[in-house]
Length: 205
Image (cartoon, rainbow, N blue to C red; front, side, top):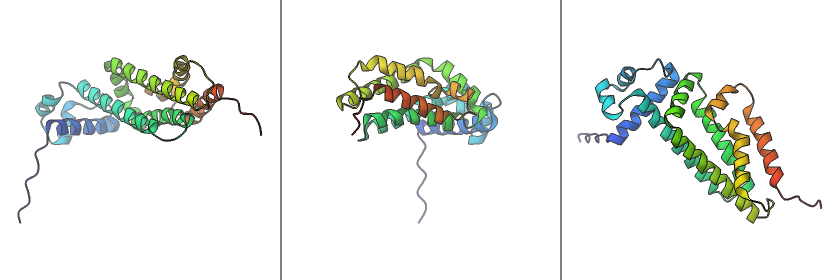
């Protein structure tokens, strides 16, 4: 029986394949040293075909950034949906953001310049992402207050304090600057201190 013809790749699938291959090459060769022609060669395409989907190498980086933000936010939503105490979910949200940036963007120093371009070109999208993260933390603090685990207070400024105190562990460039330190342990200490500061004091048995 003859094999069925392979389904034609959609435009979205082609864009995704281009961004995946480009990101892998940026990691391997460095952003500055990777040309659109190199990406095209790796994909078995002509550069002109790449330009049908992305007008420039920076446009490819923008797509990588958009995908990264979506992946982070999908993970955050999954954590928020868990049936665990608000305190644990706040901890896990910040942990997941840190681990994502450390492992997916900064595991190779060669992607550092790509991250700089992504931040510069996608500033508004990144700021909106940060605001959604802060709103998520505020909602979890409010849950903790309702659970009588956190002391009653205005959750909005507290969420802002959490974001300010933990920016070093959420911002790719700041993580990169101290990547040789034990940032995970540092974040755990800061986050534990912040959470203790708003917890209801328990009476010893």
